[in-house]
Length: 253
Image (cartoon, rainbow, N blue to C red; front, side, top):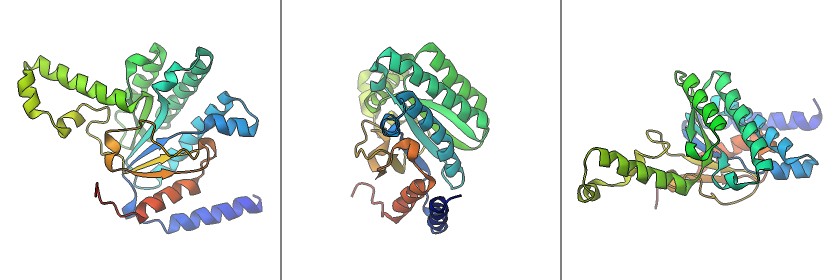
């Protein structure tokens, strides 16, 4: 171990020691940004960047397991990403599929897909479904893998699901208009039954949500980290938790 690594570990231990676990967010959303830029800066290929980013996911979930985090949502592929050229999209989907299999195989976490399955290739749909089914019994952190996910698409899907549900019950539009509210729409989101994210982390320096969990993040705290996702370290994670704990949440005021 060189001096730099030693100093980093000591500093990370110091930050962790001062962390108030009573103030740890229960649900963390993560926008995994910067894989391609990290690869370019490192002289590698985009595929190598995405593979490095996929490996970082396991580290991140390990850090969450060491705290009292209950839900983690990982934005791995947006609906906009599905418009990429096939030569870029196919390898990326393969890396995501391998990452989801690895998360499920670990045995510590329960996998749940958030996104529109019909937008994804059949093989990707199958991998996501198998990961959900094989981890359904696990009583660990719930890991939402956002693949083929878009915030606007989620709200549209929720409204569509709500309308179809009430159409089957014979509810008229007038009756539905009388009862529809925030809670009713929330029951049809991809994350129904889950707590909203307390903290949203985005790496790579971009300071925008890009449509991530538009409905659920109304009262979320945001933490924008300058480092690219593959270079995200435990100390960066701990700093995000420390920053969150230091804020006074006023819920809309």
